[in-house]
Image 1 (cartoon, rainbow, N blue to C red):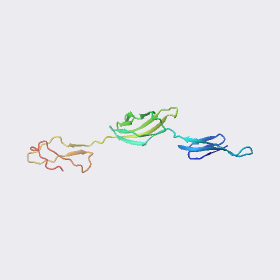
Image 2: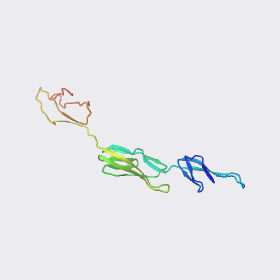
Image 3: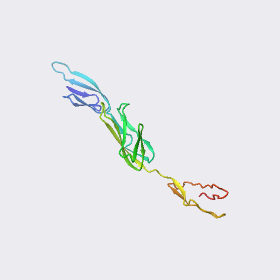
Image 4: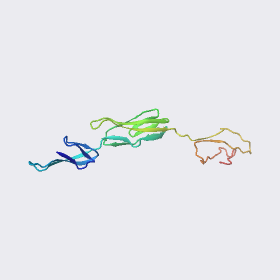
Length: 193
């Protein structure tokens, strides 16, 4: 008996004697068994339609993601050939850096600067072994933007001008700061530059 496949890229014949085939890629192929003509009979054939289904799997859409400390991020997980009711459970390798907020939708929160590996797991069942996928989450510190006067309190003589010194934290060059006075009749802003 000789086996042949109509789509070797989908189903391949592994062993004619043992009648063994292997699914290579999702799809369909016809397997034909042939016995050569001899004195007793003509050529004999039989066919079998083989459907190759995808192997159950999970994978994060991104292998590495980043989030700012104090912020939340929803991770994207690609699922192949899973039942709708199969649950994904997330765990963090370092809960002090990245904590799990919710398994559905898969939400994590950056706690403090650092890195943690998030592992998604689908439990073993009758159709597949336990499935896992990992994603590295890099947590960056929250950027603090601030302005403050060098001195919180100053005095100026009536009729004189005073240039105030302003400290800027993480502001871009060119960002305009506008000064206002709470008592225009007492103190007047002469120049905002």
